[in-house]
Every structure is written in C-alpha cells, then in structure tokens.
Image (cartoon, rainbow, N blue to C red; front, side, top):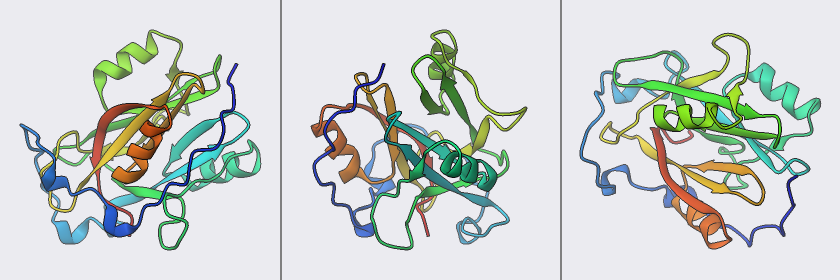
Length: 201
C-alpha cells in the first residue's frame, strides 16, 4: 500500500532553467540524423505529457491523446506540468513517433500490485522490472510511448531525469534539473538521466 507523504516543498523552475545537454559529461554520442530544424514539427515528434494521480501517488507519461483522456476522466489523473505557466502545461518534452536512427523505444510498464507505472529506455532496467512484478501496459505496440536518445550530443536535446520513491512506490520524470534536485531533497532517490529528449515548445 502506498502512503501519501506531505506535498513537496515548492519547486520553482523556469524555462531558462532547463539543463544544458552540452554540460553533461557523456562518453558516447547518439547518431543524429534528423535535422534540428525539424524536431519540433508534428511530422517527427509527439508531446510527452505527464499526468499524476494523487490518490494512487502515481505519475504517468503518454503521447496518446486517447490514453490521456482516459486516464484524466476515468482514472483520476490530472495534468502535471513542471512550470505552472503556458506553454509547458503538462508537456514534459518531445519524443519521436518513429524509431529514427540513433533512438530506442521508451517502454511503458505497470505493476498492478503497487499501482505503479515505470517508463524506461534501458534494457537492463526493463528486464529487471519485468522480473519483479511489472508488465508491459497497453495494446500491442501501445506499450511503446515513443522513441528517445539514450546518450547526449544531438543538437537541442536535454536530459530526461528519473527519480524514484520507495515509500510512495512512484516514479517521477522531468527535464528540469531544479525539479529533479528538489525531489531528491525531499527524500526521493535520484536515478539519473533516463533518456535524452527535446524540450517542450
């Protein structure tokens, strides 16, 4: 059973506080084949939206408008944007629709025993999760949320951070370094960079 902890202390993050991908030390570079001028067009990318259910203490990511509506109206989830100002709203960033060269699948998993969603592009995390109570969620291929880079180096890409809370059995994802650090300061475990995506526009 999850225990609802007191709300996090105020988390302040402005668009200017987006982490600089170039500032993160990585040893390998993703293959960037999509022109940076095209990554913000709907032909290439989808909005990765973050929702939250305060009763289940569960964060949920989706690029699917139907799934977003279902979780919002039928399952008690609310939009959970980083800043509270437009144009960010509930959009955590942009991910690719298709498996363009240099990207890997971002998988959606669910643990029914703990009412917990987990999102990962790391095959070792995926294998461990599937062996410990998680299962793919969604119809065939719907368990793939989108496609992301696993290393930095592509122009304009920023880290998607992952934090975990054992007591809440919850996973939180953000491109805002200040928000990530604030969650850690409030008892969450920092899992580091889960993937590289494009910031919200």
